[in-house]
Length: 302
Ligand SMILES: NC(=O)c1ccc[n+]([C@@H]2O[C@H](COP(=O)([O-])OP(=O)(O)OC[C@H]3O[C@@H](n4cnc5c(N)ncnc54)[C@H](O)[C@@H]3O)[C@@H](O)[C@H]2O)c1
Image (cartoon, rainbow, N blue to C red; front, side):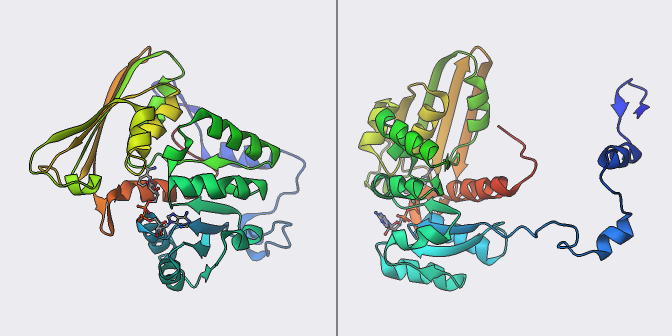
C-alpha cells in the first residue's frame, strides 16, 4: 500500500495478489491456472439464465433484438402472447419456442418477463411466483394498489423468489429512492405526449389530467407506468399532470422532488418505439440493464 501526495492510500496490484492468496487455499500461478479446465478447478461454468417472455410487442421486440445480438447476458427462450403470430415472429428470430399456455414455460425458465398489460400481471404473476420463479414486471401500473402489491410480496416471500420492476421510461429513480430515505416534502410528474400516443387527436395542447398518481394510473393504465413507479419507489403520492401536446414528437417526463436531501429535477425526452408510440425505447433498455445487473458481480447505482 502506498501513500500518494494527497495522503490517500493507493492500492497496488501486489496488494490485490496478496489479499487473493492470503489464505490456506493452494496457490497456482497464472499459466497453470489458464491451462486447467474449469472442471479441474472445481468450478462449474455458469450456465446462462433462461428467460421466458409474456407479451411479444414493442418492448419484447427490443429485448429479442438484444438477445439476437448476444447482448442480453441471458438466453431468451420461451415466448407467449395471446396473438400467436407475434410470439412466433419473435421466437423465430432467436431460435426460441412458442408456448400455447404460459404455464408451459414455467418449469424451464429462471425468470419470466411480463411485457403485456396490467391485466396480464394480475392473471399470470401470482402463478409465476407460486412456481418459484422470479419475474420482471413492465406493466408496473398494475402494482399501484397496495393490497395486490402486498399479496404478491407475500407469495414471492413464501416461494423464495423476487419481483423486479425496472425504472422504465424515466430517469432519476435511483436518486429519488435514495432521497426517500429522508423526508420527501413534494414530488410531481409532468408528462407531455403527442396526442396519438395518448390515443386522441387534437391540434391544440390539452391538459388531460391533473391530480394524484393513483387516479392517473386508473384512468391511463397503459400510459402511467412512470407515475406508478415513482409512487411505489418513494412510498408517497405523486402529483401528476398529463398533457396531450401536438408540438412534441416524443414522450416527455419532468420530475421534480423536494425533501430533506435537497431538490432534484429530471427531464426525459424519450424516443418512442417504432411499433408502439405509447412506449419509449428507454423502458425496454431499462429491462435489459436490469437483466444484466442480475448477472453482475458489481452493481453501480441504487
Ligand atoms: N414501466 C414502464 O415505464 C413502461 C413503459 C412502456 C410500457 N410499459 C408497459 O409494458 C407493457 C408492454 O408494453 P409494449 O409497448 O411492449 O406493449 P405492446 O402493446 O406493444 O405489446 C403487448 C403485447 O402483449 C400482448 N398481450 C396483452 N395482454 C396479454 C395477455 N393477457 N396475455 C398474453 N399476451 C398479452 C399483446 O397481444 C401484445 O402483443 C404494457 O403494459 C405497457 O403499459 C411500461
